Length: 186
Image 1: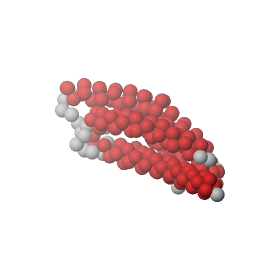
Image 2 (image 1 turned 90 degrees about the vertical axis):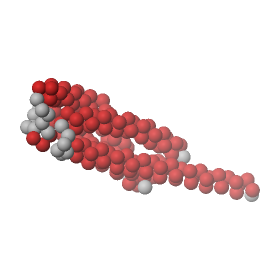
Image 3 (image 1 turned 90 degrees about the horizontal axis):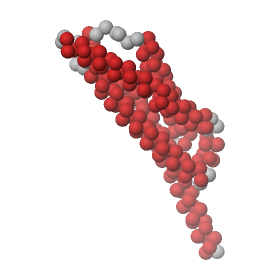
Image 4 (image 1 turned 180 degrees about the vertical axis):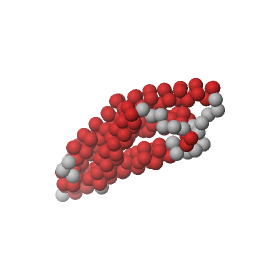
């Protein structure tokens, strides 16, 4: 009888631990989602509307911000993967996902594809474009007084515009996938 009571307590403790892991994973998804919205949809556009920032300065700050954000994403993705792996060993995550979200695997695939597309394919091209614009701005500023962002004509090429639109669309998909995973795990 004592042995059975101890086993029941151990199972209860393990169930609590697994539940806490699933909640932590849900929290990680919501935290990542919030940071993504803040960086990509609030901070980034605000820099280019600030009348006192030159385009080159806004791009330089933007590059620094997005490189740091990508590092953050990689750390959170690895941490979330580790939490998920442990929770799957408990069978709790599998049960939660099967009962609350049939397309969970698709959401994880969307999230992974978005990260690869942004980090491997789009970001390097966007950074190269930023460096070109910053160099052009520096050369112009050496010859004449810097023009403010608000007074500059739009010289963004259609290819660069497509890259940005693609990045924004992928970022929106990523945010939706994170929110859906957060809900599925809650």
